Length: 116
Length: 115
Image (cartoon, rainbow over all chains, first blue to last red; front, side, top):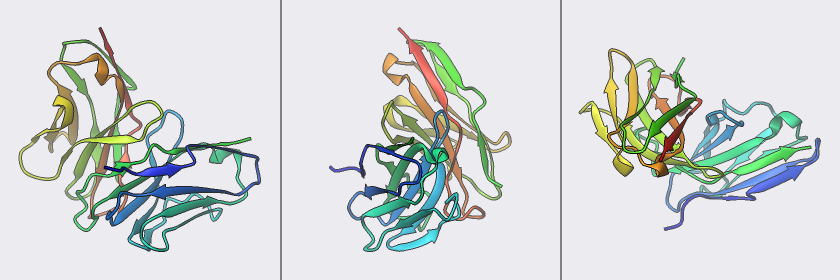
């Protein structure tokens, strides 16, 4: 079956440009997470959606980062006025339900963002 | 605050030998513990989880992990390593008591299995 799909796989942008990263979760999955993974590090939590509601955005590093999931399926992570420190792999994950907190997350292959 | 420590950046084992990848954690309340594996240029794949019950958890590809509450550890093990097990392994923890919906990941341990 189809897994979590992220696009683009690679994105190169100049400093100051805006970028948009897309995530298509597994169909029917209620929960959606965004993570930032720096080189040689583990994923760092950015934000969490339960259906269309953004319940936790405490990990977003600045107000340049914005995420949405308007219809409770596809999600977009937008970064405005990109900086070099934004260069990382951005991972999206979905899970069937978060109500009990013990469901594993299914990850996409990520978008590798490079800011020049 | 929740945290996860993977004290080894890299673990080297010979094919056929047992392997252990270490993980210790710190949470308030009961932890949910997970192991994930990551291959180059891919996302993380779920291996196994501990929620409650038996301290020895069995997962995918012959991996298992032992939950030790007194030592706050959740080490990943496999009786006989394969070259194809070479990858990056992440331990993760979450608790509904604190930390909201976050899952905290360790920095990862690179496993290298030599033929």
